[in-house]
Image (cartoon, rainbow, N blue to C red; front, top):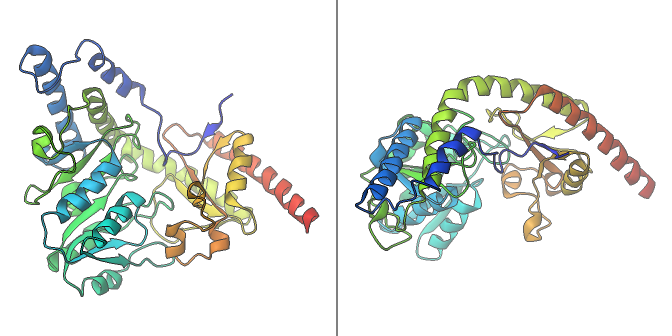
Length: 381
């Protein structure tokens, strides 16, 4: 029997309706969208239709949608592509950005840009004066994620964008984790650039988009023929683009109902966690309704994740173990969480098919594993 999947911030299962829409474009409608014959025209119609669906879901115009291979490419295109059209000055990013924003920013810092990190408070939120302080220096581009992938904390991007615009800066937001969980509207957020990805919202992997204000000059990362209005060379991945369009359409339909149901499950989960002595990171801030990031003092997060996997539950840790680091995640350190507690971090991210019974079974399994691990620790002391 497969483990219960509680790692929806990492990726989501493909919706059956998305798969059904994609399959014909692997088979009979296999044409290249740039071809002039009927096979090509059919593929082009599919791409154009999906572009409209993505735009409609995000409060944008289809001409503002640039398809990419995913959220990482969209973020790189936003940061590097927009910076290439500006005179090097300061680039300001939040201290809790995903590496696919932070690392391009670091590369620009090695090329003549000044990099500023916008601090967050202990709840993981950017306070207005922190951005104002960063903007005391001439700033060309500001990047602030809409929802954090670890804590689920949501930023007031619209207000932050208004402040940045007053200082003449372009504004980018990574909305990859937000799509499908909360409303995401390009015009309401008031940003110049917005990154999204399909596989976080029950769509296929390998497809995402950058939503870009047409007034922003962007230099492509991948050059060649004139695909995506000259901003991303390469034959379009038609099946994935079709799937992305359907996934966006479905996400908009269910977001209101899903928010309420997930918020209820999140509350039940966190009441149980509190009862076991967990520290919940970002609990004082507005968060995604599906995300709980927590730690038990003295319990190694990675060890607990493996124990829960053996117990039948797939969750994620918050430590940077994949790189061999012994440190807590950069997000938790930026929030002022001490390294030892940060290394205890575990993330549970619920999905559209999660049930209350699964949450209760998880709490039971967690309690059992904690008792076992604490008993082992006591014996070793």
